[in-house]
Image (cartoon, rainbow, N blue to C red):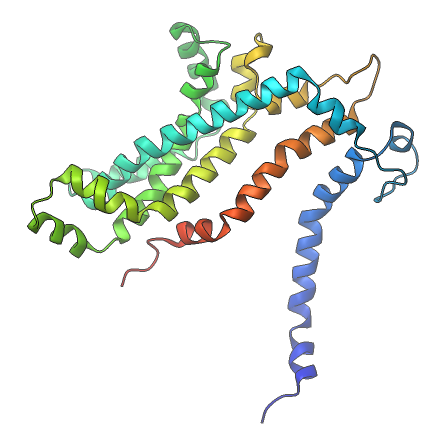
Length: 282
């Protein structure tokens, strides 16, 4: 017997309530940050309200007009983009070897790559600090490009390995019969098939590097011109003396966050395809 529509809807009501609660819990900080960035100075220190009574974009103008913030924004683009490129370039080669080739110690190496993603940043900070000082790149963007692959490269290699492992071996065998070399198989055949996984991994490593704070602060603390946006926002002092730059900090956070949200929305289908790639063999 078919249940009435209202009965099926009533049975699914608890599920929808849970979804609404989770969405509200996740979105409330974001909505509050947007609301704060649009409030005037007087309203910031008045009774708390979710909707600004007299919204203003003056704080966004102040942030975007700050040469320090715009310089840190360009630094973040360079460092995060460079880290993602390094992770994808080296990680794809490592993933191909770990996912397609047979050699002794492969399983142990896979677990070693996985273990590297679990190390807390603070545990390797002192060693990296010494290396950066000895290389003479302390206080530069090169210091961050040197440090960030420590945690982005193992992640990229691990994610891409599962994808390479899931590709049909018949494709590779057919290319070998046609006389293709290992390099040609990797570059011309297998690598184009990994585009969903490459987009996913590249975007995720970009976001991790974009939001990273500990290494960015430690390696550029004496060089404001090389600092990235997380450090610049944390040290934002306002546009006038003795100002509590709460709204400016929220506006800067929105300027930094919204491009990432747009990227995720644009590439959401490729992200989903990349995260599930290699999970099913058939």
